[in-house]
Length: 79
Image 1 (cartoon, rainbow, N blue to C red):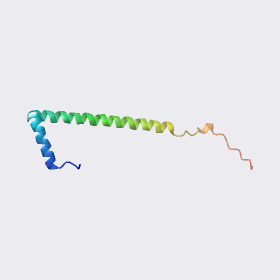
Image 2: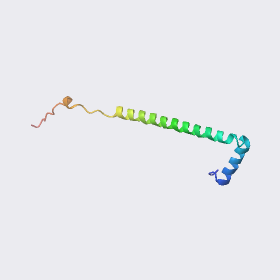
Image 3: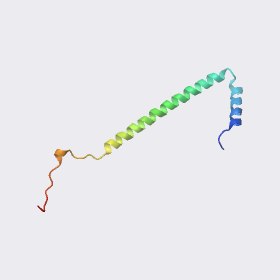
Image 4: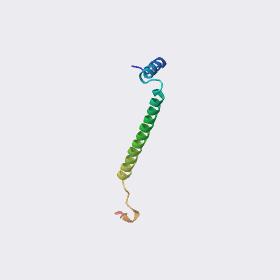
């Protein structure tokens, strides 16, 4: 099944118009728009939380180098 073309979209619109009527169509479109906005907002928040958790894991898993005061001088055995 391929993408929807212009004729298919017109047929779908006419079927929706017949099912819901002309008076309910703007209300239906408004509700659909709000729902899509809420879905996008929830998706963005979810992606932000995943990125935040990933950054925390990456930051915590990074090897920690010893502080300069913890490094002992190296003794050369040849000298």
